[in-house]
Length: 76
Image (cartoon, rainbow, N blue to C red; front, side, top):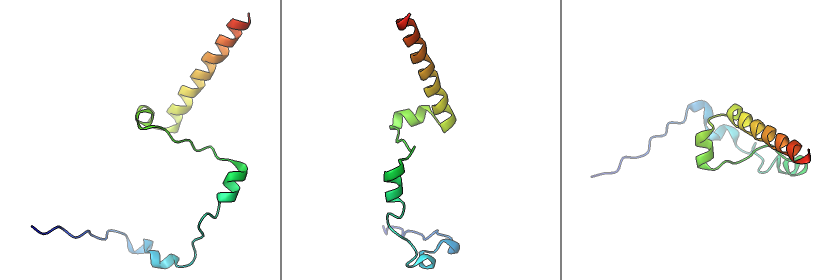
């Protein structure tokens, strides 16, 4: 049995030949290293539990609220 050849499904408007010589590797690397970034990589089990950034933010805010209330009780 013959293996099927991969089909080139890229649209004509996305042909790489249009971008010859225009790309710069690591263009923003220095800026990111200097300024930092807010990108966080989540493990698979975590991102399955939190489908979007809003749900992640809500969970982290509730965790922060819990930590603050514990600190107040310990200090009292």
